[in-house]
Image (cartoon, rainbow, N blue to C red; front, side, top):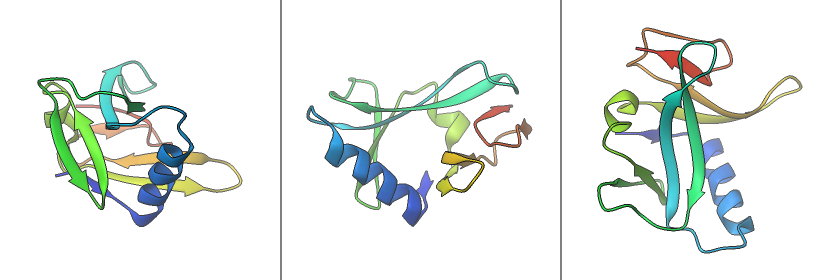
Length: 107
């Protein structure tokens, strides 16, 4: 299960409405990098891949590849807008450590 806060849902829906092309869903992906070793990625996806996990959370369709899903199962995604940081913040119970900005982690 992946959780989106109301602020995250609102932000994603705004990005989908603003997209110039049709959107099949929001892709969540983990890749190498970031200050903690792994980093979160998000992008609006035009098509679902055959092996994607497809989840609907609060009306938002999420697309997650099979390698990413175990690393973000039970993650909580928020959208923050403060003087010092604007963007998505991930709270991942699977992470053994994560950076203070919440955009990278290690397992």
